[in-house]
Image 1 (tube, helix red, strand yellow):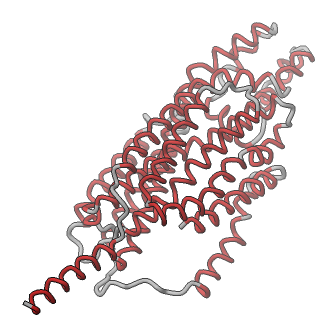
Image 2 (cartoon, rainbow, N blue to C red):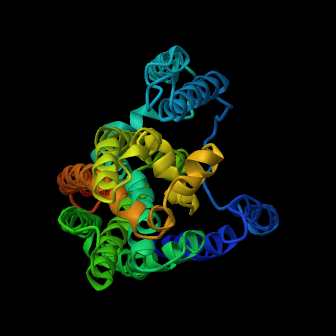
Amino acid sequence: MGINTVAAMSGQFIGLVLGGLLAVFDWRYVFLVSIPFGVIGTFLSYYKLKELSIKSVKTKIDYWGNITFVLGVTLLLIGVTYGLMPYGNNSMGWNNPWVIISIIMGLTALILFPFIENRVESPMFRLDLFKIRMFTYGNLAGFLGSLSRGGVMFLLVIMLQGIWLPLHGYSYDSTPFWAGIYMLPLVGGMSIMGPLSGMLSDKYGSRLIATTGMAISTVSFLLLAVLPYNFSYIEFGSILLMMGIGFGTFGSPNNASIMNSVPAEDRGVASGMIYTFMNTAFTASMAVFFTIVIVGITQRFPGEITSSLTSIGAVNLAPLLSNIPATGALFSSLLGYNPIGSVLTSLPAPIVSSIPASTLNTLTGTTWFPTIFAKAFMPALQTSFYIGALLTLIAAVLSALRGEKYIHEQKKDEKLDKEDERIDLKAQN
């Protein structure tokens, strides 16, 4: 499991740098680059993977379960996606009727899902596996760990691209590449600790190792929460390395303990359940943390722009620039451009020509917008970090409650050995 984690982290390492490099030319290329890797992965999966698992005697496709789950997750994620987009005069679309209907229908389907799974012959989700303590607590800890880091990772990239890198002289169109470079300590920490934590858990058990990993992650979130926006990169990189070490220490021991806790013939469905929880939490995390940040920016951004424009003698531009949508300010940072330039080009030529050249240079430079954006963005980001710390702390507690080292086959064999000894003793008597 540790080696598998390293492989996944190495892919993220390449993706961060390669995606940022391609975004310099056009951000849409980051989607095209997935095609050759997908083709190669499909080929290798089909021709190189060997079937070693123990198959269940009776296995059928769970059509009703698949339909219900896919429909529920799809509708829920569509609702969340459009809920983050402006609707009417609101900065977000949570009051959009279609968003409300989509979320309600998605949640209804997901509520029906466990009832369906309890009645079908071969369920895609083996709910009876939750009777195993290590399986339940391990999945809950993994879910909360993914929930804590999913959206926060994107917010860290936005902080680098929209605030820190421009303030340190990087052009907006180069920030996607350099953000990938500066995020590497996080990936490096996870890659280093993946195999190491796996070896340690094989020797000492998963509970202590995984719990320690979540505790380290909690501390790293708290350190990020007190970091100023114009930080020293040595401090920031060290915290990212700590966070990577924390999540890397947790990942493979947690997954290995879950897989070891179930019968061999159920490891396929157990693996599917692990990654379903993780991926669902990762996506839900973006909805939670982006909502917090967008609400915070919406409340503070117009006032910060008006105050700054007044200080540079351009208060007449406040009604125009303060109407920049919060999502526009947020995602312009992610895409690597200054939204002020786009707003100015959309204004009538007489208005733009009336703006002094010095004021235009200030507005379109690399320091004015990042400073304003930071004042509106950082309080909400700090709140997100505190929530992340709380989630990882709960995950650490759940991880500690999973129980001692447990391998399903070993327990089964021990019971059989004791039964054989009892029979032999009875025969001797």
